[in-house]
Length: 637
Image (cartoon, rainbow, N blue to C red):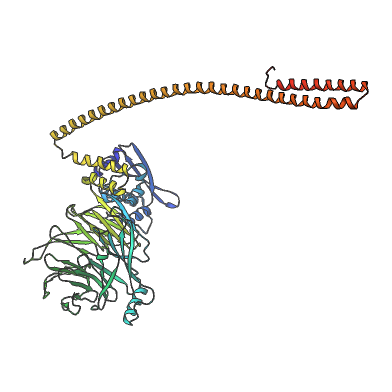
């Protein structure tokens, strides 16, 4: 990575200039504004042309992802004169200058594309973040979530919020025809495949035939409560003893007459706190369903919209549609402690209490975030106002980090981070394609879980510059635990992290020890090389001796084969001679037997002479044949 990419936002702004240099009136009287940008450290300069409608589109897109945008001059219905065009040019220059100095806007992808910054340079991130994973493919919009990080379990509540499903669910409940037809909502339980990845498998689901509005899970009670549009609250017990693999019906609370807006399960008192559009605040003991309280019907005169329980100080906070705040005690008999009425009507959509210190935040629909300090139990004044922070319009969910002094809220489809100390937006993350309905912040691991109407749930990792090394270590470890190459990188990062805490004496001792270890390794290596060399020489000697023995044995074999061949030839010659002698003896015997007969039968001397001559010729032929037989193997008789 280029070192220049590691600039801070302030260093980047020192090297970046933006000027609106000219305006030109072209064909059809269309006015174009020429912008000139320069990155001095990169020696890059470029120009772009924009129309006023482009500035309007930019302003509209930015308003969906951030807050408190600077003033944009309005569009005129009539043709502007040259003097008016020059004034608009000056106003647009101020508008752009105000946008550039905002870190959240400078890091916004929409603004970078408008100026074509992504083509010529890299804008530094003031807050680093990355997406860890997502769950998609839901058949309905996501309404609410609850993530149990220690167990790798997430509950996702989905439902269609259109008029058809609302009316159908209400009529089915009214007529007693529930659980017929298509469900209009569902609670889904999913488990992560392992603790290092955000890849989930579905365990089970529950269908609802009235539109689900909200939910709450208590890990100690191992129960989940779901508030429905028809006013019912359905409670189920999750079988933790079976590793969350199943559930069972527990009870249904039918006390409200309108849509449930918030529900809370309290472990200490086995109580369900619920509020509704019917202006009722109910407290129900789930151990005894008949035991319930309907709180202050005369005081609560507007629909109730937000609920939060402080179990430590035994308090319940309720907000309504006109911005009023009511504080009740959780100890029976339940009574109101105090109430705060604001000067203007502004619906409260979210309430958040910090864990470490007693701060409570109330998020209003118009974006106002009011911060109060919570006094201890028994104090005369429960809420002490601290500040009012400007947040995004259409605020639905709210969270806070005391460690980083940052407020996290939705800004339509973006995740907005606000510096609570300076009341300034830090960054806006374009997280979803539709309205974010819920944000859950897991402070122990600095993880966000966001739910949206775009049918998805996403997991985010947020880290600042102070935690870069630790976060990189975690990122490498979570990526693939079994990868040896990454494990080596993890070890190197751990060594770098620990290096800062080692004093000079310890560091010198470690270096000396490393030097000794290195010398020992070199000596051992030399010893092994010498042993290998000796073994190689011995092997060569043994091979030479075996080769010489093989040569001697080969000579003896050749001599033996030659002698055997000569002996065989001699035996064959002797056998041939014996057979010839036997043939000669048999012929002589035949001649001796034939001669007397010839003498007696032949009285003619001439015939006798011819026969003798013929016999002599036959004997000569036989003798020649015997000579030929003696010369078969090349031996003389």
